[in-house]
Length: 71
Image (tube, rainbow, N blue to C red):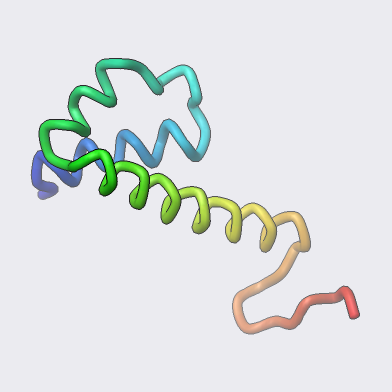
């Protein structure tokens, strides 16, 4: 279903989003097979942005379509 590069990107996302122990030289070697250094950084920044937004929404207990209770 996913290409090899997408599977590596998903592993990278999993490492950033939760299981920090899954981050290893092996992961970065695999990323280097499909992505430039700049692309790895860009992908990491995008992943952490979405993870951060998700955690903020969850922390504030927001629902889709709701407004922030802090005013």
